[in-house]
Image (cartoon, rainbow, N blue to C red; front, side, top):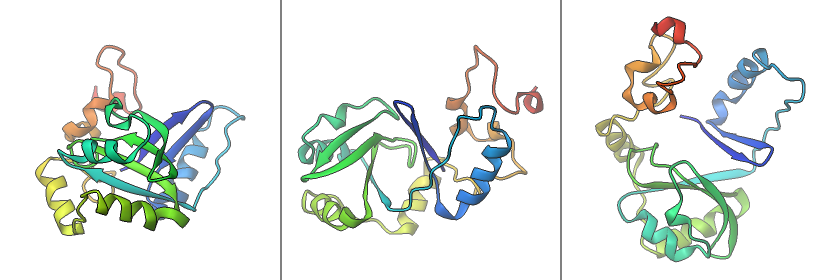
Length: 173
């Protein structure tokens, strides 16, 4: 999975660090404007908070009203006294969810505040079980060059059926 945030003239792309080199090379090969620059950022961490009570828990810790964010919207916030960026992200598990991006140097403190407020750590196996049960694919694991994106209902939200313009539409047509 990768996620995109737009903040003014900055587009942030979150993806697994192991895939960064290949993804950036692919995007550079399709770059249509000379004004595009990529900056790699390694000192950030993303904490995913998901579940039916996640919004209430996060709302109690943030000074801003982040629990009311629209799907995939994001804002700057302060969580337990720490500046962060919060994105509403129901896409990770097909459950109410928020991604909290903080500097790696403060991630332990933010994580501790979430746990103290009632968040629960889940194992990777539990996370994957919920993801699979809810039909959320992960590229490289569940989707690759052998699949057509529309084979995953999860991806249909990214396509405008009225406009009809998206990369690969010729393959689908």
